[in-house]
Image (cartoon, rainbow over all chains, first blue to last red):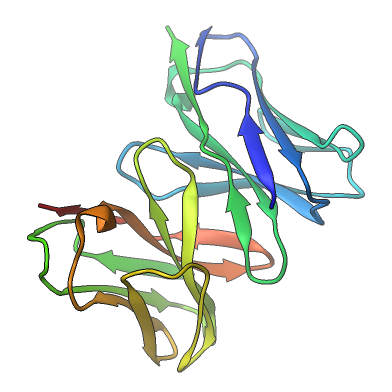
Length: 111
Length: 110
């Protein structure tokens, strides 16, 4: 079965720096991969989707890369702000009607 | 625009009691709908999905059931709750492979 590993449970960075979160997966070749943001006690919010034939996708201060050879996606937040503090979830397409989620990385941006 | 409503926000229920969580979607027709559960420190687990009225697919065997009595209504139920049913329950609708979640229900079974 597929497995997703997000690099660390928690990541602390200084405001203004670039946060880099890692998502590694095994036993599958997803057609696309997604990143979501989740705040405490709230549902996840969709951020970005990247397809297997795309190397990189950007949205404002967010950048996602997708390396199907390494089976890895990197999620970058540039010029990080305290408001970016949240848990970020990686999810990969896992067959029809299913997204398989990682356990998330809790990011804290320190002012 | 589309919105998704989920209630209640929190629920405390005794073991053995029944459960009914409701989810409704506005602004779209014939959506694919999902129920996920998130246990502490674990990823989101898909419980059920539905592609239309009366069509329910279950991903894991469990103490729960789902129903879709109307196009934009999705209900999660249990006849008798177990301690292990505690968790954060999320309803979602899907478009273009992306999921849009409700605000969730924190269920504590005591």
